[in-house]
Length: 464
Image (cartoon, rainbow, N blue to C red; front, side, top):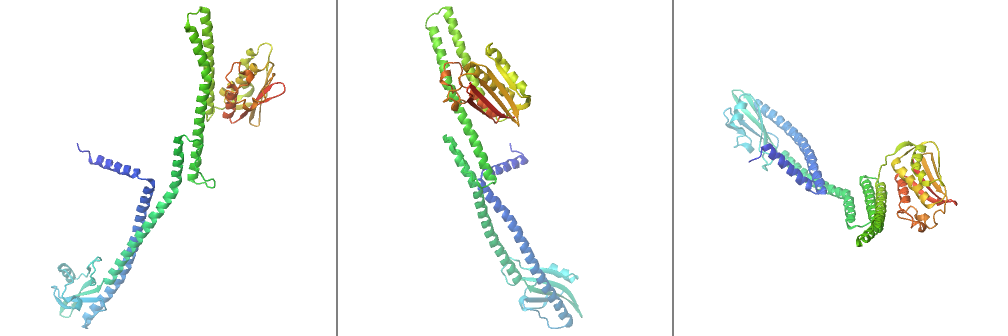
């Protein structure tokens, strides 16, 4: 079945556009420059040719009009007919017979039958003999008019040669063609060099970015620092993207390494407990103890997985859900769940300045909880929580009474799975302080740990 004509034309147009868009950008730019310059040059050449042709025709018509007037005057006065160099004349009867003519056109009738009839009726005729492409030097422009003489009527044909005019126009066309060709070549070359100069940095960026496929780290595009054009800004944007991709890849590798490292121990313990339980029949009490041990390890796995996922979520969060919240209410709601865990012999005191802060409470709450939980597990005295908001900065500090941090542990206190030697036998995964540091960093702040002489202190500064 033959498709409709409109559908076929649309399909052809789409195929043409598809072929055009598959061409390299440099070639498309050069072709666009060449086509545009061709149109501009053709228009300019046409205007120049028209103006020169008009000037030459005006001069030729003026010469012809003068000669025709003189020829008519000589006929009326009965003078001998003559003319300037490059002119010719014919005197015809109303029937079209040559009665008198100059040497150049003595045998060639210059008028057609229709022209003779028109002039005999009283209407002058103006026409050209020969065309511009002809190389005949005797091309003419003539004017025929009726002249009434005593006793008879004749047709006077005055003609001037067009050879010089045609030669000048042919020479002009040749000059314009050469000029257009050279200009088009120069414009295409300049367009090509300009396109290459503009796109070469993009190609360098592409080749450099392609090295990421090889797993090369630290790849950055060669962006000049002393420029601020579109390509330079593109390069900076791509470098920022590469940094984010590298950071994301590093987080992924670290997550996998941390997860495999920390999950190996509880999984091995689970497997050992189950192997022992299945090795031979066990009393109900032993099976109950085994199940409790398995439950403890499963809970440890859940807590560890949640902590790792929270850290990864914080590392990938670009925009937190900040909202204004009353500072005393924020701290009190975070501390109250831990008062029961402190027991009767330890207290958790809170000293909070009044004010409102703009933070994400969903992350601040567990961060404060981690600090209090660490203080409860690793110290033996009271715990004091202070919070102030001054000049757009929230400072939150949790201090305890105890041995403090080991000196060699302080530089790595906020690293993942970092645990002091004395605390390795106690519960915990070593992710609590890392989580606090990640919450502070995601808010644009920082965390620090120090010893006060009476115990440990961990502070968090967050712009609010």
